[in-house]
Image (cartoon, rainbow, N blue to C red; front, side):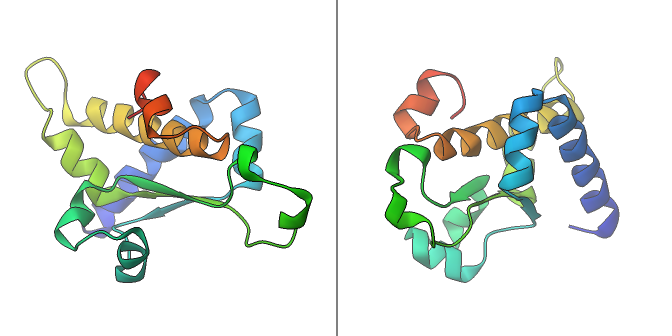
Length: 135
């Protein structure tokens, strides 16, 4: 991905974050949203994914969900949400048709990915997120 494509993608992320409800934006002030081209080899290994599967990964939440926390967890690593340009772009490109442009689909997939990872912050699992349309 070249610098121009990164800048376009990041501008779409900024718009999507700005359109989120204010309370969700406040959460993102405490839980950094990081945008990377693709997951690192170390992250793939930690998640048990192959290099080929890296293109399918759109985002990841690192931290303890609110339902998993206790007072003993006050000194754990800070939580983060990371979204991956390549995974989101490939997913959006696979859905392009006459009804929706790539940019529209990128906006949609960026929003879904951010909300999906925020859902993990609140303790939702993959089944919960699929049930509400964020999978």
